[in-house]
Length: 178
Image 1 (tube, rainbow, N blue to C red):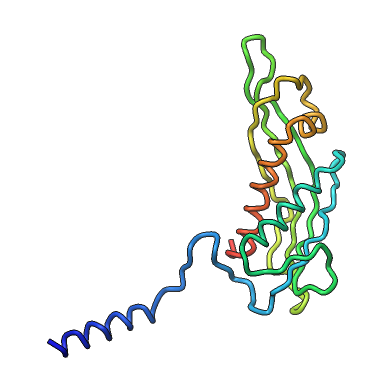
Image 2 (cartoon, rainbow, N blue to C red):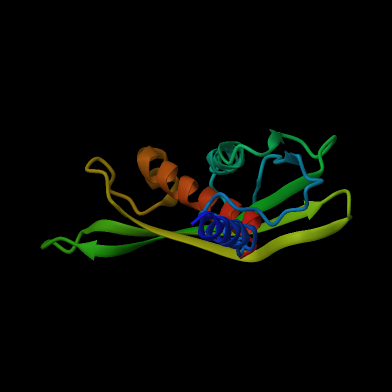
């Protein structure tokens, strides 16, 4: 019986030692071990809408910090890798109408350009030159215009949701090599 237990123990240890390398979604990383400090300077804003780059930048920083492995700084100097990005455009289109043919729901589309650069190896690790994020939102009752500046200014919840989704998508793509 002792020999059987010994063989079982050897098999268990062998199986554990040959694991396939998978990790829980959102917790793995394919970045080089040399990357410990990530710079996330303010995203550029090429859209005509003032201030939208701030929540997008903050959400990216928070998402990296939330992963628990990296120190995040708001600059490019003194870091191992840097995330550079730009908000290229913002569009809002009606997607649902009431009986009076007034828009009650809008599709918000934000197009960005993102690059994650390893400063030590002097190479781009990940990039997407036209990353698109889309979300649908109900029009706040006090907003009557489809102007993105009015909509995003009045619908802080919409801006928070879309910037959170954007940050999750970007950081997951970088860390999990998608």
